[in-house]
Image (cartoon, rainbow, N blue to C red; front, side):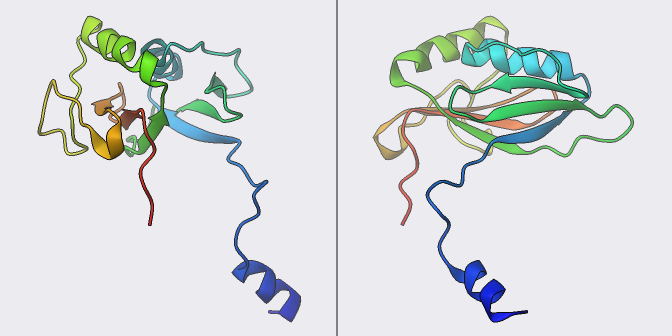
Length: 141
């Protein structure tokens, strides 16, 4: 590897590099996108090729992509949400009959956590993705 390439890969990431979008696999892209949009109080965007987007409002889009012939590998998606909207999100989970948990292993049903001075909860989406809502970011070392 040339020296110029080697040194560029060892430098810390630039402040202007941001996640723009990620693909979320779903058996039914509309069902899964609408589920998350309802819980978070967002809207599902217009289809974009094979994708159905949910814009998170911070420059990041979740692009739901339908995979009907293969098993869906569950992933974890964590959403930093405003404290004043957290209770409404919990209420929407309860309204649609989705159990939420205080922990990622789903052993504390119907409870929220108080990690890092905020509140958080985990829940499964229709495809088994482990979704998390939290009002404070994790403190990183």
